[in-house]
Amino acid sequence: MKALELNKMMSFKTNLRPDPTYYFGFDIIHELSSLLKQYVFDRVYFVTNPLLLDLYGKEILGLFKENAVIHESLTIKDSENDKTFLNLEYLCEELVARGVTKGSIIIGFGGGCLTNIVGLAAGMIYRGIRYVEMPTTYMGITDSTLSNKQAVNGKQGKNQYGIYYAPIFIFGDTKYLRSESLVGRKSAIAEGIKNALINEVELLDFYEICLDKDLENLDNRTLTELAYAIIQSKLKILAADPSEKGFGMALEYGHTFGHAMEFFSDGQIPHGIAVAKGMCIAAELSHELGYLSKEEVAMHYHYFGEKLGLDLHIPEYISVDNIMSTILADNKKTVKGVKYVLLKKIGECLNPDGDWQVSVDPETVRKVLTAYKKNAQQPSLADSWDHGNMVTFATMVFQCFAEGDVSLGTTELANRLDTNKATMGRVLTTLNKNGFLEQDPQTRNYRFGPAMVEMARAVYRSLHGTVTAVAAPLVNALKNKVGERIHLEVISGNHIYLSYVADTPEPIGLKIDVGDQVMAHAHAGAKAITAFSQPDVMDYWLAQDLIPYTKNSVTDPVELRKIYAEVRETGIAYDFGEYLEEVNAIGAPIFNHKNVPVAAIIIVVPSYRMQKEWSNDFITELKKAANTISFQLHSSRKI
Image 1: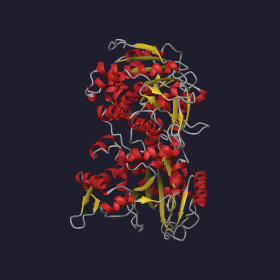
Image 2: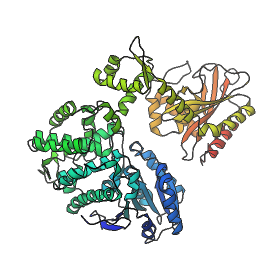
Image 3: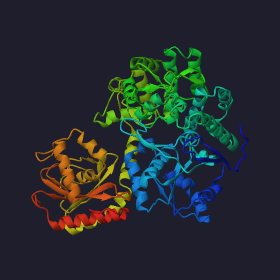
Image 4: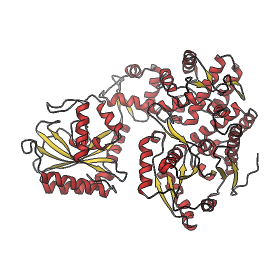
């Protein structure tokens, strides 16, 4: 391996087509401005997430300023759940609103999710703006940058929508890897082991020694040399097939199964760890077809399980049917159906059809998956928490209680979640120990514990935070102007809550308190928020069991869509006795700096005082208050 000097930048080609230069080293950030100034540009747009901007923005943007690099910074969400069209649209619209041009350069500074979103935006805006990729994770610096692939996820699977779009260069400073979690580091190393399994078997000896080190506390040299070794192992494969459409398909070893688990875990299983599980399944499938020996299959468990310390089982909440259905929507599906990258032996992939992929009868795949799910070593509960796999399982337990059951026993919970009592018992014991649940000493049933109460209070405080603080004075001012009760409703996720009330001397009995959830089909504020929200929020509500609270409640999804369309046209939502017959209300949406609806302000009156015709003065004052709050939240959108 080429000798590395810390604080000194090296460069090499990636063998991709187009082939961006990769600038690599430890603490080389001082070189970035001069690299950028090799190009003529009007402005650099530095896109990252809030945490990375807080950690490193002062240094990087300070260097831009010192070197007269005209720039702006902006942040986006960048978890696996944020690789969506919605987030992509926000970034594109924000960049255009900020004046990005064909002469600009966009930098994506973050992990693979962020650089995927930023790279796709760069490729789409004006049919292509120059892009620089700055990975800050081990996976990003060693793997995802070396592909020119930019994508977002679809509703049926990962990376279903994207393009090939190359950065003008890649800038990999391993200094920024120090802030990554151990799980993220292990996830990337798993992809490095994959390169050895498919093409460079001699590298396994390197990992045998390297993985004995304390991976969480690697010194700067080892951190950098390990990353460089993984990069070079992938470049050897890309040299043979820059397009990744021939031998380069071998890089997808384990990914078809891994992507399915990653998708169904809702991002709780990191990419590399999901792929490690997928490689073990692929090894078992290859053995089932008569290729890999049992010893070669065991090598997978040795490196990923024993040496790297990964949990290799399929979580209980992911079924074989889940995986099979997602495989059918995999982004590598061809006209011949789903094909799999499999090993003929360690270091050599099967290539029966010349495309380095193998067609396998679905029933054989199902058989192997079923056996793997049953037989793969189940980790301790503590290990599962460490890797995030059981977080989703725990939320499913919480959901059982949230649906209205105050008290539930181990057997009933196990039956509802289709798991065995022993596993459920371990989950409940841990949740009980940490205060999330408590057990009744007489019935032995469980209920929400004090830790959940504190979390609920924290959620309420969050809901009652910035938006409410900004809106409260204007809510009170509107009450004084119109002389009626005023509500503020806020959205969190897909749910909408009553956040603040400015009451009148003669309060109305509404049977709803601050902190309670309100329904998008029966409350004026919730209607206003939903009408201006993204389609998936509206689809969520229309798929619910819509309760007819009164004879006036509208529960037909088709009719509700028409009502939401009218709200978008007028800016005002109405409630004519749809939640309580004796109460009518009108609501208007409030938008944040992203021009996304985050709340609504509502005038609430007894129905005998306000029938079908609302005063124009009331509507004018309501819109004025909503627009003023939106403006104070830095929104440019008005109703």
